[in-house]
Image (cartoon, rainbow, N blue to C red; front, side, top):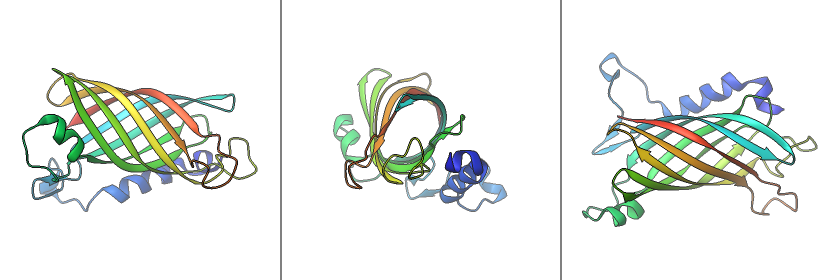
Length: 190
């Protein structure tokens, strides 16, 4: 339906264009930075499964995360996890021409033990569901929440198991079925 079957490549290119700065040859391996802050600190790709009103589907998910926002200068890792969130932007693209969406928000990563960590994300999403069509989410603009557990395989590679939910929290009317997905992402940190 909607974007997923008409223009998924254009949808993904628009997402990349919004986050990608102009490139120069010297920038081929460097992420854009402002001081110690980097807009592209980690990239992830994943596969998710969703269940929405009895319809099941597979989603692929590209995601980009920034470095931590410089709000806290202390050395406590737990305070840093809450006071230094990362920006996140990504997409959930249905491979079966069902509901797809792009999202942005903030990500909090909390160390648990050794290389094990938890993540929480909150932000907004723009979906391609259509009013009057099966799968209508009640509003094209929704909130997005995500929680997950991850494991840092190496200093540059991690894997995260997540559950995500998008809905408009009743702000667009009574129709608010939401969309929940769960899956795995593999990340590479620059």
